[in-house]
Image (tube, protein in one colour):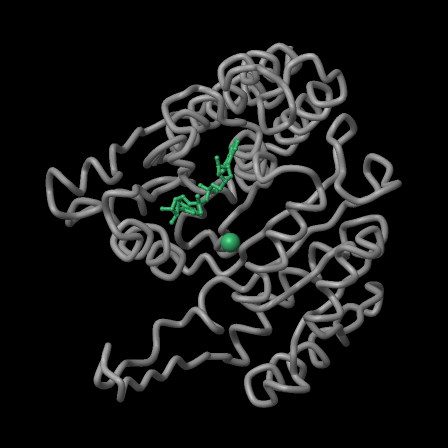
Length: 354
Ligand code: NAI
Ligand code: MG
């Protein structure tokens, strides 16, 4: 029996609601398929915690998190507190502090989920987007002069390092190598952003030489956006900068049915620090507390966590259970056109795991 220590931050809004179901599914699968023990350390860090203490997490919070093997995260964000605090003092610093440089966002068209694109068969869309998660356009470098005056000046700088580009490219190539189609598309806009994205292209040309078994090409982001809609089945592994990866994965989530199904992993492949697993969606204040949020994005994020903990059979079992429930179509939350509650959807997944 292996013990895995998992820190749980449910956060705000629907975060804790969906995370509870993710925990149930992961527990059921890990027990049955890997005879593994998972321990869950629920941490109350959220907007409520901020209102009580003036901080999103305690002074020793990062040290506490670092003692865990993984972090399962719901969402933060509350209409009563600016995102500049909730998102920028907990979620974004975590990705950099723990050097979670791989943001993995799968997009898969499940049977039973209506696709907004005409004529796409289940499984036809099956891609993994690797988004650079620690630098690029989201590096907090810049400043404002004479803010909120007519003379206002702002500088926002992107940071591209050869090391940063090479490591995300290698992670993506490693993933492509393990998939049946062995295809990789690198996304830039180096015709316009010649310096930073030019460096990315140099890194791509260097790294691809180490992966002769992977068929790789480079595509400009605008063409990629068009092709995600026009022929998403052409993509297998996609690797992109922080900003482009963020935007493209909203598109990949949209063409595969619902934001309520989009999962993600923020991975430090060296395992020097814990990796963090979270649904792509936010705290959804409009439906929070109603018990109708779709928990499957969180459940599928927990499956990515099980992969990372090398509990591959359990991870596959969770994904298979989600596929079974969606294909059966009897239990669906409102975002999928049904009337089921968050808990009923969780029940159905646990039952399918068996
Ligand atoms: P959102 O993802 O929370 O909601 C967008 C829309 O999708 C809403 O209509 C919501 O009801 C629906 N939705 C989202 N998740 C759903 C689910 N699991 N089941 C059914 N419907 C779902 O994005 P929004 O409204 O822009 O942001 C709300 C708050 O969340 C903001 O404070 C934002 O900053 C924060 N946020 C936090 C993120 C995080 O913690 N990783 C990510 C995105 C937003
Ligand atoms: Mg986004």
